[in-house]
Image (cartoon, rainbow, N blue to C red; front, side):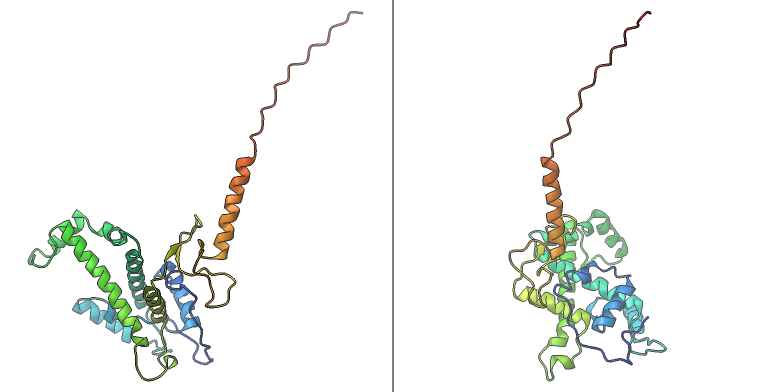
Length: 269
C-alpha cells in the first residue's frame, strides 16, 4: 500500500494527457506499482471497481476485504497493491478489446490464443459433473470467449463512466478517478468514430489518435499524421535519411595489386 497524495498540501487539478488510455495506461506493467503511484500523486485516485468483474463468491469476498482494508496511517487514502494490479489488468483487457473492434478481423485475432483444443479439454475436465452451457466445439468456445471479452468492455465503460452520469452538482464535485477519465477518453473516441492510427516509426508501433508534440493542450493534430509524436517523426526521418545516404555511397574500389619491385642488379667491381 502507499499514500495516494500528501493530505497536508493543496493538490492542483490537472488533466490527463491526450490518448492516456492508449499510451501510458496500455504500456504500463500492472506490477509496476511505482509508476501507478506516480500517476496517483499527480492526478488523483486510480479508481476501478471489483464489481466490474465477474468473480465467484470466495474471490469476491477476498477482493472486498482488500478494498476495505485501510492503511494504518493514511486510512482510506490508500490502495492495496493487488487491487492496483487487478484494475490495471482489467482496464488493459477492455481497451485491447476496443482496439480489436476497430480492426477487420481484430476480435478473432484477439482470442486466437484462447481458442484451442487444449483449452476446450481443460473446460471439459473442470466441468465433467455438468456439461450443460459449456462450449463443446472450437466454434462455441470462440463465440463464448468473444462474448466474455465484449462483456468486459461494456462493464468497464459502465462502471468507469458512472461518475459522469447526469445528476446534480458539477463534474468537479464528483472527483473523477484516473480510470474514469481514461475511459471517458475512450468513450469520446467511440462517439466521434475517431481514427485509431499505428505509429509509422518502425521501432514504435504505438496506437494513437492525436500526435503529441509542442502544441498547446487540446490542440494536437488528428489528421494528416503518421507518427504518434514529433520525436517519432524525427527519428524515422533520420533513419530513412541515413539509409538513402548509405545507398548512394559507391562501394570502395579494390586497389590494384602492385607488382613486386625488380631486384637490383648486382654489380661486380
